[in-house]
Length: 512
Image 1: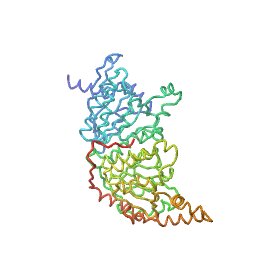
Image 2: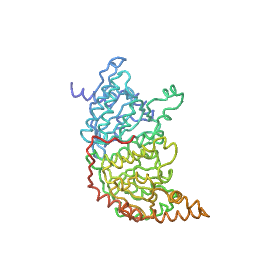
Image 3: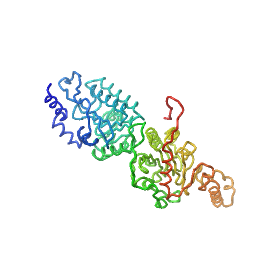
Image 4: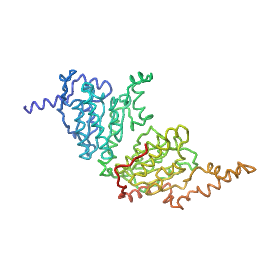
């Protein structure tokens, strides 16, 4: 074979099946696999693996169709100069469906990513298993799932959904750390609309069943949803800039132009002293992090809690915060699950945790109890108790009952706990506590309302004043809100070299 012949074969592989197939892909508002890789990686950095791979299957006309790449492009490149591995389904070839050769290519690049200790990004746009290859295709998925699990907590895994993902194929994204979706063009579901209609009689569209908005707002399967592929892939690059290469490294630090000692006088106005008045916790986060920038994970699911990645003095930090604007910031089933997974991710990749508390408790109700709020809430408790990264908590206002304990209190292992002068740490609110403790006195009083008001005031003065927890060593310091950024940055710097060992064990058995 001459060099000229090699170049001709490579050109055919790079061009794809046909111009018609490319036009059809663009007509759907979708980029080709190679165009997506070009957006993701630094210019000129992509090195392809097994570009000339072709399937060996026969029957059903497959022997006459043996395109190069076999419908998946695999390789590595860089994002902001750091190595990233990638595979991208090429919908123009067999609809991106997975066959034996296709799967083997993915297995190889996953193994390479694990061995090299570098993130893996999958650009998903495939029609599922290649039916013509039968059980061999299904076995290929098993190999992917096994490697997803092996890589979990070892290297960052990001799934970018840019087309359909149905059946068992949807479990690979579910096993990864982050899932991105694009509205209108990407869908995920185990059984499609036709099967749903046949079994249950329900009629629904593909997007209504498993579109980006459904998974971003209702199911929680999707962490990030965007209107177009370009924005989506740009945000994947941004997320990668906040993550380490693997679990043996720290996240990359950058120089910050935002002064560490910057005061935040505006915080006094952002957070009302009245514990019953709502406010936007996102604005508090904006005020204390570098340049007001943070990346919120699961922004539209379980909105009563915020999970975000940001930088403080150039160092990456994971933030978990109650959101008083939604359900008064209570913890419920979905908020507990959302925060628990985020805490586990941060702990796996050496990202310090900052917890901002303003929580009135767990959400009461029959649905919550029957839905398993006990075991779901325990997931968050388990995640925090198991985390060995630096952990700092800050109580802004309310911190009541079990929710206070679960939200990284000192008693479950927070390294440092701070509070603002507006804090109220207690078993429950003063009104509820007075009704329990002083029930008889209130009932027997000539003026029950006046007696209740007096008992509430007494309870507050005795057990809920801002310095009660500090006096008992449950809070390390009560700080001026304007100094919050400086105090937190100084504390994070001190904890940077923290080392904590867990007991020897194969693995824990977390609540499900």
